[in-house]
Structures are given as C-alpha cells and as structure tokens.
Length: 144
Image 1 (tube, rainbow, N blue to C red):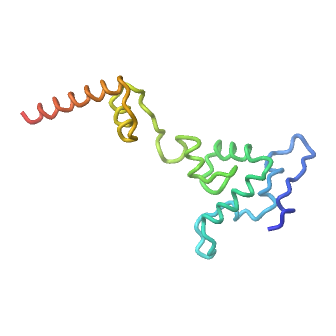
Image 2 (spheres, rainbow, N blue to C red):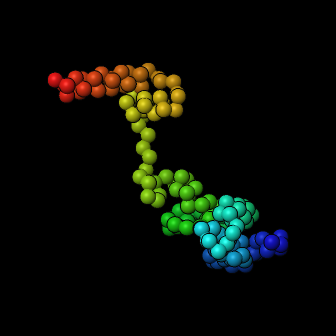
Image 3 (cartoon, one colour):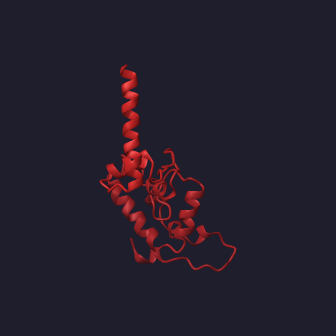
C-alpha cells in the first residue's frame, strides 16, 4: 500500500461531513470489516492491525469513533476500535448489561476485593463479617 493513499483529503467546505475527509474513503472498505471470510487466507488479527494503522493516521478518527458509538455499529473497525473494544469503551453497549461496582462497605465490594487480591478496608471487613454471619444463620435455619 503506497503512502500517498494515506494522505488526508484536504477540506474545502466547512459544511462538509466528517466522513468526506476520512482516509477509509480512499481504501477498499473490506479492510475495515475484517469479519471471518473463508475465501481470504489473511488472519483476522492482521486485517484488524492494518485497519487500525490507517485509522491512527486519519484526521477524523474521533468523529468516526463517536459516530460508531452513537449508532451502535455492530461490525468493523471504526475510529481505530473493533466492536469489542468499543463495547468496553462505552460500557453497556452491546449485549452485556452494564457493570455496576458496589461501593466499599458492602458484601459485594468485599468479594470483589478478595477476587482481585486487594486488601480489605475496615468498612469492607465489617461487611464481609456481617455477610458471613447472615449466611451462617440462613444455613442454620434451613438445617433445622
């Protein structure tokens, strides 16, 4: 791929849509949609890397990424990010529910600290002790 292909298109009209200045308009769209294609032997990771390299040089990368997030684009590399990366960046987009982190002082936060081998603060230590006690009482009441 020649470097001249990656030269940004100069803008002449302030009313011009951001996509008119994008580098991807000058390149085969298949580069930016590296979904599985059995006819193409190029590994998906290589295709994604090529698309991201082009996006890194694009003068409208931020606008492209924002458009992909706003429109919940399902496929392709937009603004230098894959769908999975956009999901992580934007939180609850996609099929996963939003991840809610409980504040310290709750049993859920104490379990999170334990899972990540983090030290427990006093509030989480008390919450974990209360949680253990309540669980023991529930087990005891079920057993009797």
